[in-house]
Figure 1 (cartoon, rainbow, N blue to C red):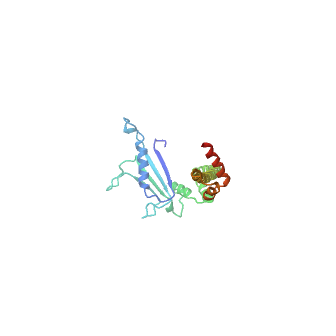
Figure 2 (cartoon, rainbow, N blue to C red; figure 1 turned 45 degrees about the horizontal axis):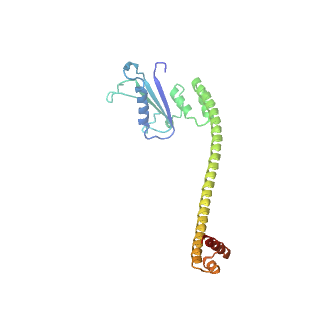
Figure 3 (cartoon, rainbow, N blue to C red; figure 1 turned 90 degrees about the vertical axis):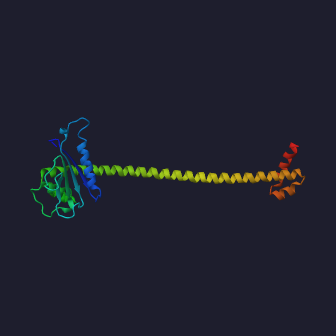
Length: 233
């Protein structure tokens, strides 16, 4: 603000159990962040936190706008004007709109549910009209942003699907490869075991037909094995 005061405005659409603690935290942070080590306290300027709530915080009355500051509990005398909370409860807006209450006008604008309500409120104040035009511009940008995000999401989804399909294919390929490898290994092991048995039978002088019959090997295989065995002798 022109006098050095600073305002933090926050909007909350749904009930938030720790809203009081949150607003006090940011108000206090705004206040203490003004000065550093060795700076004089005279540098401290007013800090205001405005809570625009689309839920009811104070259920015992119909007051939609209240100002909260530090004061004496007994006398009500204000302790300082350096810290202030403004609470706007949109759910408590009165049915009749008083043209002399600018805060209520802004609240009505902020609570607008459709374009017609916003347009009607824009006609009540040049400042609200300026805000409405800015809202239109932002809405146009928002549509462009959403279109961009939709395109990016489609690209990410496509990449994710392709990546997932590739990983699934790799997993299946690995599984198949392992199965094939194990099967091949088992088959090789069985064949080697048969050869070892056949060799021992050859050493005992058993005939090739009997060896083939007992081991399940072809006679030709046993013959080749016999030739190798004899060559070694």
